[in-house]
Length: 245
Image 1 (tube, rainbow, N blue to C red):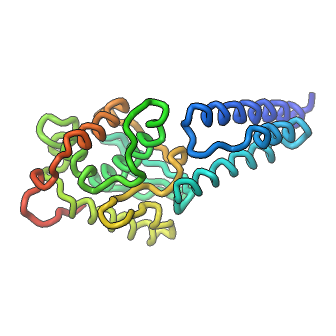
Image 2: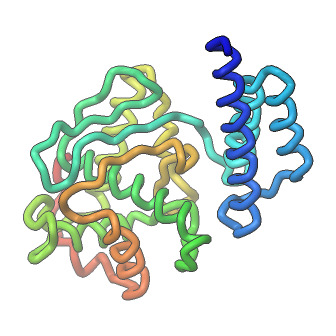
């Protein structure tokens, strides 16, 4: 069998498996919108008819566009946040394959919190966790940072007395750096007043390295703990001005 024929057979199998996986995810409510089963299997049938790569790409594009429409996302950027928290790894942000941007410790932490929140929301339906809105309020960002960096936290001392103004300043700086690099500053999207921020791209497009501290399994607990306690972040913050990122 020629190499091209072998590739077509493999890709046809990939399309069928992706089709079945998407259908199962729709059934358990893990995806925001349910496409018609017949349309999905039509794509798989096209793969059998001789152009599996086109069929696969079309299927994935339609799913991505539907997710963007459902969640009203502003980009489809592929985002990679490099560097594990609690290590001396190089801290970088890479978008759509462009040269990476170097990140300060606090910029890196804010982006990691937003990325982990996107992961948390995407996994919430199938785990039965409480639902949170698409945007992460700045008060919760500060609460999570305080738990991570406060006395006894896994990143103790990294960010003493975090404040909401610090987070706003970090986000503004990151947007400016994205724009200067000819990247989309709307990747870090603001909600309506008081709603907070989010990474405005499908959660599956976000890759974040899991650090030594905290472990991957702890992030949901951090988010839920801050929300459950109704933590008054005003009590965490001191009266000083915002700190530099």
